Image (tube, rainbow, N blue to C red):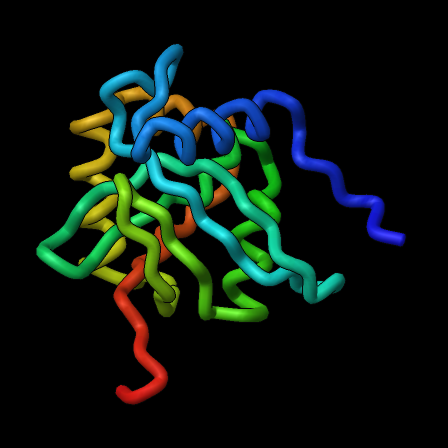
Length: 144
């Protein structure tokens, strides 16, 4: 039996996102929010999580494994490192994406843009005591 449960807050956000074409209220009102469905690193089961994203060009989205400043990365990050294909829901669009961890200057550039847009990420970095990974999502096709 699967012991994983989506926390009630995330479950409400996911339901509101899907019911309203990718728009939600509350603390995420007007924020760039997507739903990321990964494959569980251990379970192999689908896991959906809301995440803030940063658009970086027409087919590139960055997500930040801040986990609210926790000393450990979120489960979705571990899932993506084990299984880099995911499903992304952004607005009313749903597609398969490949995740790659940003490195070097690309990571630093994306991080600086995210902190400028959402200053709370600087606080998350301070609290975390670790370098927060940045994952880049790009559309994936089996034909590619």
